[in-house]
Image (cartoon, rainbow, N blue to C red):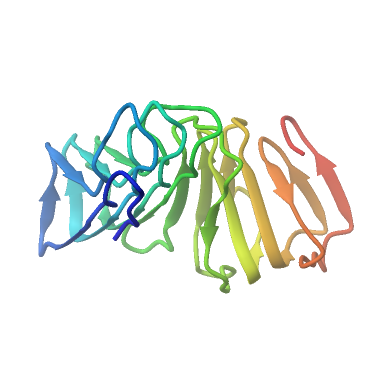
Length: 220
């Protein structure tokens, strides 16, 4: 459940466990109340969906409050455990639906189709923010994710002590100010190319396998 702000409550929680196909042509929302001209809106809630398949062209959203003011809560958390081969809709968890500068961070979207490890998506609707989307410390190597997508100014921070592996094609970014920061152990190929996003390490980070770093197009 999303945390509340001075003006509005946070988003609620949605849990659906469907035996066959979940068809969404309307909306499943876990947003806070909106207050378009004021600050202090709540953060997004949580959506947890389990089904054999997800279909339709609707909207699944757990965003922060929509406000013309930048001081809103962050995006919520959404998880979809289903085949999405027939899904033509949108799954969204930005920090502010109005697309502002210097506002809140995105939430997370996790989509796991059968026989996959799943994809983690951080999409902030092109809201630039000094805040990063945080994951609790943990071991995110191995089978945690098949891919992490950092899009539309999405920025992700894995808290200390975390472990992650950068491998071929498991980080997808769209060069919109994206960032991956990890405090902990980052396993990489000996030769690492960083393109389209910023890789941030700190005194809490170790990269034991890397011997050569190449900064590619739109990488830092």
